[in-house]
Image 1: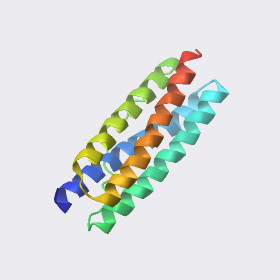
Image 2: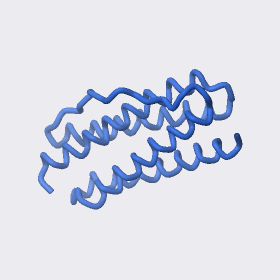
Image 3: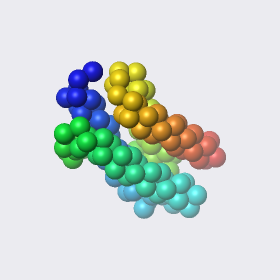
Image 4: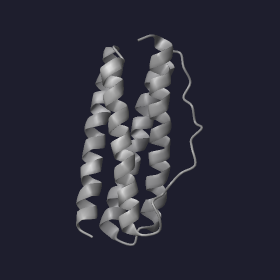
Length: 134
């Protein structure tokens, strides 16, 4: 895969991390239950760290991180719908990183994507566990 396409894939992942971070920060503020709120806040920080790693990969390859994102969907006003939305976002992220791993062909990109993929799987599990307790 050529460098331009790698940068495009990394930027798509970067934008998804922006959306997830913003959604999780907002939801952590309005969640009424402390445990899901704390977990959501902690995962928002993880997503921001993913942004740093992706931005590093993008700039090392001569690109610039793209900051534009779609309108955010938070999942509604109740805890259940917020957690359900967050599970969807994590599932989307898992699919993004699986794709990058399968097509990038760049050992550094694949290594970072694999690490992020492992964290996204853990995040989804955390959200699913909180949803099951409702």
